[in-house]
Amino acid sequence: MSTAKSRAEVEKFMNGLVKRNPGEPEFHQAVREVVEDLMPYVLNNEDYLHARILERMTEPDRIVIFRVSWEDDAGNVRVNRAWRVQFNNSIGPYKGGMRFHPSVNLSILKFLGFEQVFKNSLTGLPMGGGKGGSNFNPKGKSDREIMRFCHSLMIELHRHVGEDTDVPAGDIGVGGREISYLFGQYKRLANEFTGILTGKGLSFGGSLVRTEATGYGCVYFCEDMLKNKGDSLEGKTCLVSGSGNVAIYTVEKATQMGARVVTMSDSSGFIYDKDGIDHEKLEFIKDLKEVRRGRISEYADRYKNAKFFNGKRPWSVPADVAFPCATQNEINHQEAKTLLKNGIIAVSEGANMPTELEGVHEFRKARILFGPAKAANAGGVAVSGLEQSQNSLRLSWGREEVDAKLKEIMINIHQQCVEYGKEGKNHVDYVKGANLAGFVKVAESMLAYGIV
Ligand code: NDP
Image (cartoon, rainbow, N blue to C red):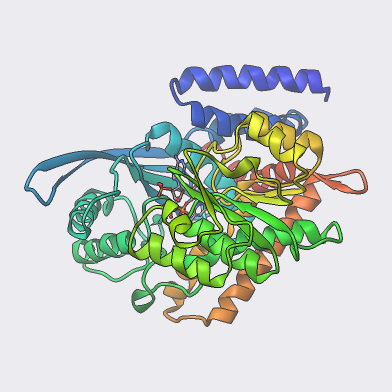
């Protein structure tokens, strides 16, 4: 199939999608990135074309939208909106995180749900894709306010989740504290103890290594890409953005593997520490972010060699490897070019869709090692899948066992990307590899079900 024909079909398809889903730029972006790779493949397959597989895979199975009313500490009634996007359950129950952030809207949750379908398929575990969240802002709220909000949200959500239906987890703004409040309320409403959420506390059905899994997995994936080229992370200078769950455990694993991580960030700016963020400094950040819920600028107050750059992102700092681990669209076109100009050799995406489409095109054109989110950050959902298995078996596996399984899953994802994304002798297009490998299993299942 000619590339011109394929490009024309992508534009035709995207015009229709934009018309059907107006005002959803993040969703359009996520679909375009996938469809650009899938179109030549689909045009060559009569069954996919006839079954309208792309139209069906870009339409969520269902979306639940609901009001969450709650009372703040001053006795004021507050109202938020929440969503659960159940995108596709062709290969297993819906699975994907809940995000609490004031920016949350339907477009963002549809992009995340769509990506999740491919990511979950890549893990090789039986999980469909979903995503949810609320425009609730947890920053500055007391524990009791967070509790009241979570309890109120679950009053509606509990009707739509279940261990064989939909199993949410955490994401931005939803960590161990929020999952515990949500699970406690579910248990009360349903009068049953089943693993309907992952990321639970270890004393009530959580899995070892779940907290670390997304960050660790992102580093394992990067190491696999480098290894495929006869290289490794040892001695590499790395940039990490964010200072939340994914960022913290990315820094931890990269450092353990001999890399020197020189940046971390939050929404107010980034810190640069040329000596590297070692174990002791990372413990300070864990306490700062997970316990005291402070700001990253406090790192530069504590460690005088470090500098804080207010309102800036870390991508202008010269380095070998970048791990964007904060949020979507945090590397724009210009920043991608700057990273390349400064000699970046690998980018492994810890966050979901952190690179704008033009930036992705730059990385692919430059043929660097570019691990897209749906492959590189799949370790989190993979260990969530393992948490579900342990819950069903009513037992807990040890730390080494779960970590070994995570490593094996990341190697397997890397292998699938190589299989579907190999170009010539020496190059792997990981974006194409992940998109195609994730797609095939879901598409084949949908074909097998008939017109559903
Ligand atoms: P956290 O809430 O723990 O941390 C988010 C971090 O990103 C914080 O440092 C936050 O800074 C920063 N951040 C959030 N929004 C922005 C913004 N608009 N601009 C700049 N910085 C921002 O979330 P996670 O670490 O769990 O998630 C990070 C990313 O990883 C997300 O894209 C998520 O979807 C993805 N992901 C998470 C998984 C998980 O297991 N948790 C699994 C797979 C993907 P501040 O505190 O100032 O807001």
